[in-house]
Figure (cartoon, rainbow, N blue to C red):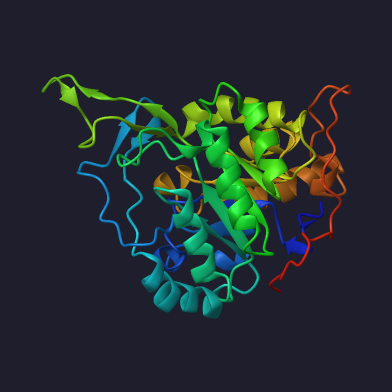
Length: 325
């Protein structure tokens, strides 16, 4: 099976990426993961100023899944520009990199794009509008249509690179939010972020995490992510990226069948740092056994025939796009 897929004029050598917040900036995993074997990765979310993150403990098991409240800890724009991107440019040539952006106000997203867009080494941005772990915000931007429009339209006006918007699994108006993001200029949608949740220490009768609540990821998020992808696939022709509970080729295939063209592996890498590489190998073997020609043949294949499982024509970058090789 041909694993390579193309969107926005960018060729991804396979459909498996590492998810934001789980792989740092790539450098943190270089000793244990063959990063250049991957389709790519999404960096930790970058904010204007450095952030230390939330009070520890920041991660815990909850059933078979994980709950975390890291709080967007990152080195900030200046160090990302001076330290992280140079490393990415030197070490990641085949794997494609998206930079995740986060902010407390719409203008912070715009300033981040203005501060990064002249740099090389990455192909586009993933706008983190749905993180449930930022205690500085009353609610994620993604649950406010006006904020979604302001952030996406503002960043769209400042870059020709592809813009991905990361949506939330607890959005009661998910389809409308997707349409809102598309109308404001998004080039793709990432589905989904972690699900807000709580774990309680029964011995001490208090929240397990230092920040109290957190975001649930891992196997328990798989069904919600698949439903979100299938729901949004019926409402837009934008390319979709599926994330949430991907730990095997079978999980990745479900996202492809639901309408995603790329999948992101996150929590599984904590248990097995090489899980993404294993998924890539298993996808290729499955496709060979099934006689499948390419990944594109699978995208949306699990949707009802009446569903408009179209995807954006490959090879067509957004207007004015500057695409990395």
